[in-house]
Amino acid sequence: MTAAVDIDQLHFSYPDGHQVLKGIDLHIQAGESVGLIGPNGAGKTTLLLHLNGLLCGSGHIRIFGMPMQKGNLKRIREKVGLLFQDPDDQLFSTTVFDDVAFGPVNMGLSPDEVRQRSREALRQVGMEALAQKIPFHLSLGEKKRIAIATILSMKPELIVLDEPTSNLDPRQRKNLINLLKEIHVTKIIASHDLAMVGQLCNRVVILNAGAIVWDGIATIALTDENLMNANGLETVPA
Image (cartoon, helix red, strand yellow):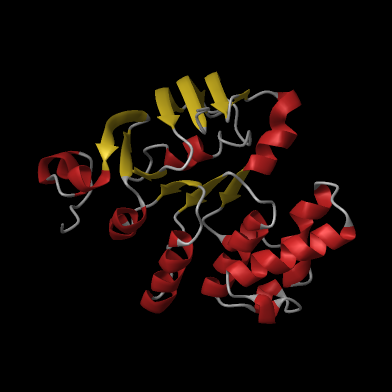
């Protein structure tokens, strides 16, 4: 079986010379749900942005067997849906429907297929009734659901989420977790919400100071007080 993600010796530094990723090796099989955790500044978001070519470091990345290179970017970005921490970075059209349709339109699909995919994605996230609303006027929880719909309309095989539950109230958070449970594709979730990670992920990767320091079963990591304390994290009750 072709792995969803193969990363070998990935290094990345920002233009100011600050090295953020230091020799990352990471291999994720199709169908896995992986939590990416670690303290602030560990490099989690930087790593996520490499998975659809928004950033490019040195090393080797393959997504579903395709090397991360210019000629493959269009196909890779169709397979990898990236959810930004702030949905306002993802929503820019005059209506919710237009935002959700943007990806399928740029895939060159027929108008009928675009409408079908967009309606289905909105149905999946429970936002059909808001199709003609202006995204700017929605609540944060609604915006996050719409942002997820913009990804689902492209039928990705891998969804990468950066702090999906941040700033949500308890009800919105619960609803979003339940929604993510129902999305049956490979998922990589970077978050400080470790209880959510425990609910959604069977595997945890701990990133600290740009390096992977632990990779294994989620329940073992999240309940190991010494491991979590050493990496600026708190345990999650079993």
